[in-house]
Image (tube, rainbow, N blue to C red):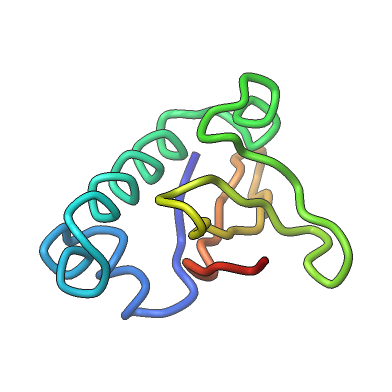
Length: 99
């Protein structure tokens, strides 16, 4: 699956471990890197959900059409999905505690 990011700052947090460490923690940086790798390796969001990879699940309510994966409690990696010529694209929109 392809990955896009909602902002340049978010892209740096998700792709540069040192930036994630400074913003969050060592453990959080590792989890972010792990989740990004899992998304890249998956063929589809449905596969992530089916096999409960990172406890991936679809959100409800005002976050309808968004998906979340666990990071370090209570944070989640939140993304949407698009399709472009039979290829799914995960658009990472934020790292947040939405509870």
